[in-house]
Length: 388
Image (cartoon, rainbow, N blue to C red):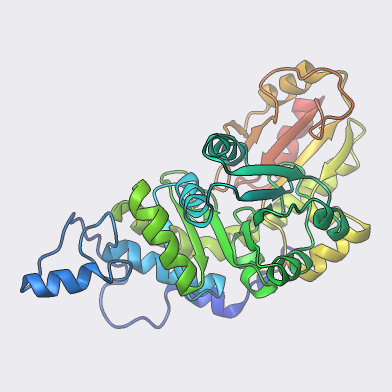
């Protein structure tokens, strides 16, 4: 697969990102900066409240600008509906809060975003159990299911090792047993992976990353069936209150308009940089789905249209400190924890040296790179001087 080809994206998705074919009017939707909306009568108001998941009554519920973004996300995800939140964690929290009860169990598969696990640990105090499975084969995942498992929550690709899970098999297994299948699809974006078409019930994103794309706004979204999204709206979103602001929705709509172009360039540059580093004498291995082999390569070809501008590197260096020193010598890579903007970033999975434990999934000498738009030659040169 030529991950740098602009044809990697579905042409319909390109048009959706541009909102091409929309009715005559403003090229960009107006920012409806209103907290509440008037009705002609109390009867009309009360009727609207019964449909507050789709009618603007109070902007904690539905706002016209936010609704515009939700409709675009739903089309990209091939979903019946989507709901947007003030952050990715807002979407995750509302989903777990809406779908789980005391006595239920969640199985987390893959390298899950740290705060998601912190939330699960908090939910344990309310009687919701959880366990983790790092295996990438369906047999091991099936064996990790318990009699009370109500939800399987995946990240594929994960955001550090970028390992892939057999999504179609997981979804089929879950559906046959009445278990919800939910995925954090942030790394792939809606352009590179369609989890609902693979059988998942819900697909979540941190819009803060590639969807917004300019490191200037926060957001989250969950997409799925009308029934499930409305359930999350009623039981999670409205009660937890993680509402997306209208101006943030406008910024995400603006970001989506250039997402195909940004992502095409970022994944092409990231691929070339990752290949360059894979042959460098100071690199042990590169974690990038398009460079995987065996089963991982087959999953990549079957599930994804390409990869983003993210990858990680395990350096052949003596310790954690020397790895951090390499990162600090980089001049074009900002030191920051997020990713998906137009600027290149670098971070480490470790805040401090984790020690020599052999069971660590994240090597002590690992750095994660988010490739921006500075140009591959300039970034390769920067990496070269940092590793010299």
